Length: 468
Ligand SMILES: NC(=O)c1ccc[n+]([C@@H]2O[C@H](COP(=O)([O-])OP(=O)(O)OC[C@H]3O[C@@H](n4cnc5c(N)ncnc54)[C@H](OP(=O)(O)O)[C@@H]3O)[C@@H](O)[C@H]2O)c1
Image (cartoon, rainbow, N blue to C red; front, side, top):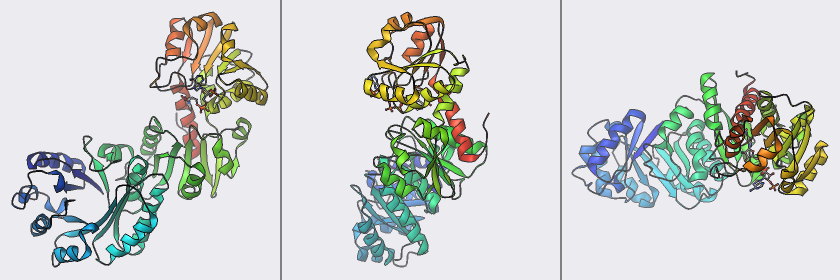
C-alpha cells in the first residue's frame, strides 16, 4: 500500500491536498504537526470523508488531539514511542475502531541494536502496526530495515520499515515488496521526510502496487542519479509483464554491498567507478568481460554472480550502423573502463586503433593490453586522416555540456570528408563534440545509441528475452 503524507500548513490547504492524494494513494497520512490552525474542534473537518483511510500523526505528541482523532474513528493513529509506553497504552485503551501504529524514528542514523531494542519495547504494547523510520548513512542501513520486515512478519506483526535520506530511497521501493505494510510517497514534491519518492514514480515506473515479491535488478554506481536505466528496464519489464524490478543502488563500499545484497539481487548493471573493481568479488566472468577486464553487467546463475560486458557490443553496433570498422584508422580518446570495452571491440573488428589519454600511463597500459599505439592528448593535433573518432572520456557530459575532448579547430584538421564521430557520452544526447562534427560535415553517432544497444543486451542477459 502507498500512503501519501499531507504536509499542508492550514486546514484548508490540507483538505485540497487530501483530495488530490486520494486519487492516487491507498491511504493519506495527516501530519497534524504541520497544520498551524488545527485544534481539537476542527479536526472533524479533515476526518469527515474516507476516515478509515486516514492515518493521523502528530509529531508534537498532543494527547488531546490524538484523543479526538480516536473519538472520530480515524482509520489509523501513528504514535511515536517517545510519547512513552504508559501514555500510549492509556490513550488507546478501548479504542478498537482505530488501528494503532507505534513508531520509532531516528533522523540521524540507523543502528541495528537500537532498532531491535525499540522493536521489543513496541511489541509489548501490542500495536496493530510496528513502524521504524531511521536515517540511512549508507546502503547497508537498508538491510537493517529489510531484516526488521522479516522479523516482524515472523512474529505475525504488520510492519512499516523504511530508511530516510537519499541512501534510503531503495527501502521505500523494496520494503513493501518484501512484505512491509506500506510505504510513504510524496505528491507534487511535498515531502514529510527526506528521500520520499513521488507517488507517480512508485506506481508508473516501479509498479510497486502491481508486483509480488519480484526479482530484483539494479544499477550499482556512485553517482547513479543521472541513470536512465530505471526507466528503460522497468518499462520493458512492464511491457513483457515480468515480475521484476530495477532500482538504483548508490554504493560507497562495493565489497560490503556484494556481501549484503548478493543474496537478494538477480542481476545488476555496473557503472562508474566500479566496472573494474567489481571483478574481484564475482564468482565468474564470461570470455569478453575477462578479455576487456571490465564488467558492466552481472547475472546470478545457480547462486553464482557472473560478470559480462555489454558496453563493447553496444558501442560497436552503434558505430557500425554508420561505417565498417575493418581497416579504418580509429582515434579513441580515453583509457578508462568504457575505453577498454570499445577499444577491445575495435581491435576485434580489425580497426587500426590509436589511444590518446590525459594520463599517458593509462593509455600505455591499455594500448599494451590491446596491441595498438597510444599517446597523450598533446598528440591530437599531430594526427590526420582519421576515419573514426571515439570519445571514451566523460568530457562533455552534463552539466559540462560546453566541453569537448577535441577542440573544433583540431577536429577540422584531423578528419577526412567521410569521418564518423562517435561520442560515448549520452547525457546530453547531442554533445558539443557531435555538434562540432556535424557542423564540419562528419557523420555522427550518439552515445545514446550505445546506451540503448548495451541495455538491450543487458536485458537479454537479465531475462533471456530479445528486444527489437
Ligand atoms: N553510452 C553508454 O552506454 C555509456 C556507458 C557507460 C559510460 N559511458 C560514458 O563513458 C564515459 C567514461 O566512462 P568510464 O567508465 O570509462 O569512466 P572512467 O573509467 O572513470 O574513465 C574516464 C576517462 O575519462 C578521462 N577524463 C575524465 N575527465 C577528463 C578531463 N577533464 N580531461 C581529460 N580526460 C578526462 C579519464 O582520463 P584519465 O585516465 O586521465 O583520468 C579516463 O580516460 C562516461 O562519462 C559516460 O559518459 C557511456
